[in-house]
Length: 107
Image 1: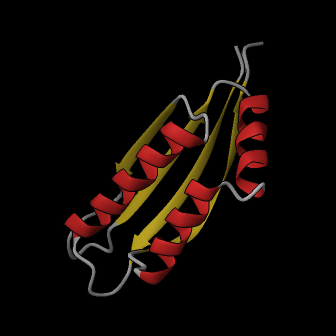
Image 2: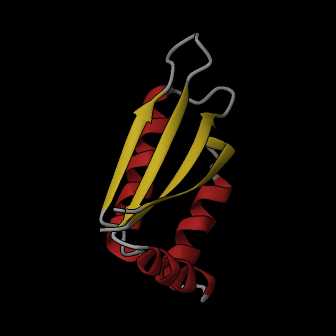
């Protein structure tokens, strides 16, 4: 069975604690599971403390079609996404460094 993963690499903003970063990541996880049709959200810590900590944030979808539907919903300016983005932009805690899509297939 094919599945699609959206991967983000994010870092904390200057002066933001690890606990605050983890709370924001948890907020994102709830939103993606409730609103975006994700089947799972995995968060990995890539360094911590004074070691230039970063997070790898993986949003799993059961198929490329499910990922596409998620993007359609986001682009349609769903109220919950708009509200979340408004809050996140007023209180930035993480900065995006890169990311991409992985398409897993069974051949």
